[in-house]
Image (cartoon, rainbow, N blue to C red; front, side, top):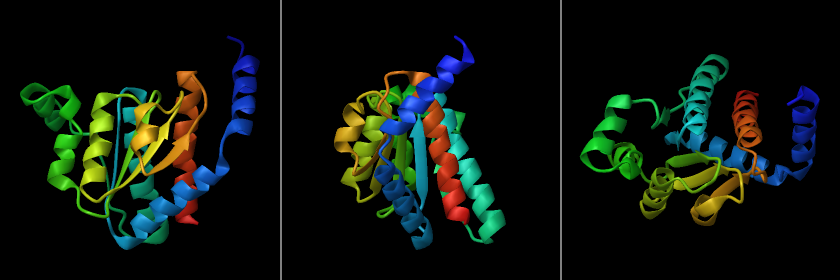
Length: 181
């Protein structure tokens, strides 16, 4: 694919994004951060890396710029826990199992998914909703199950996984810049 085609697809997609959802999501993340509650992310594949990237950027930059603690965790980062839950229970339990150990009422669970249908991230959001957490999905495609069950959403309306993943990562950078300003 020629780069111009890829960039033009991004340009078209930018016009379809709901900036109110982005602004609302940033406000939610900021509210939870300021309250001293945990922000917990999860995803699969490229979205797992995005979930980890969010927490890395937010922890580091807020600590440096604001000189304040940011309590953030990515459930994707501990291969021992992931493989233990997958082996002993089910791959579908790798995130909800971890949430049972660390999540408290008022924390924020952010699920990142291209399709919005990954059973393990759906179970994480279901658990978080049932136990008093705020929930935010960052999704693509038609939003899948996650957009239906999450309390808050940022939806990238595209069935191109790479475009969705690009914008999901950009969202994390927008959040970081907003929280650090």
